[in-house]
Image (cartoon, rainbow, N blue to C red; front, top):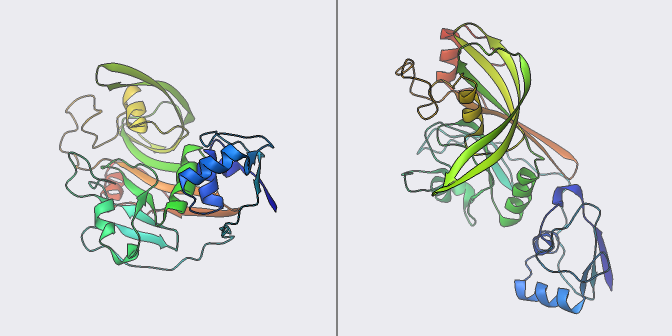
Length: 304
């Protein structure tokens, strides 16, 4: 018995062993290695290593192996929910069998760290929503950034969503209120961002598409679409052009705006992606403090 599969674009550059687990089921790593070594699993009619990065339209053949195949869901059933986790203000936008989507509040970390006393992973681990499973973080959002955030409910969904983010197949839109008037109304920022790993200097390419929604001599409201996902990318890029985000205590030009607000004015407004040809779009309402600053700076945004 032979089964043949063609790799689709959502799995481009994924490890072969990871693809096998997502497509076929929970196969022990030892068995995967054995079947690849003996030719019971072949990639493009040849033997391959488990760590091989597969590509779109690759052919994977499986010979004489009986597995309970996982059939991809054509549609994900959504369960409407107005539940709010009582230990914080994180509102659930959507809740389905595979993941939840939150409107994350500012000031809470996604997962634990040396300086994080509370985080979403710990909070939702104790929630009824994840009873019998656990939350999987599939992307990053800074502690002080609010807005759309996704947490998977199982390992298979986590692997798929993580791959979509890594392959830049998730389209993110942020809103930021920055100091001063942005000179150009739209464009693309290409930057070499510097970070350090101990004493080692690391330079990373960063790319962001930007559009000015409204502006005046005091402030600008920007729509930002990051193409790359570098740490603090949007904050660093705005700081580098002399228009840092209001409330940013790390990337700031002076103390002249100290005390104007205590929140970072950066909001993950919308996320779009596609699974099995089904399109998903999630938007997060603006926090009250964000709307308040828009009004005080006389900036217009039609969607609030």
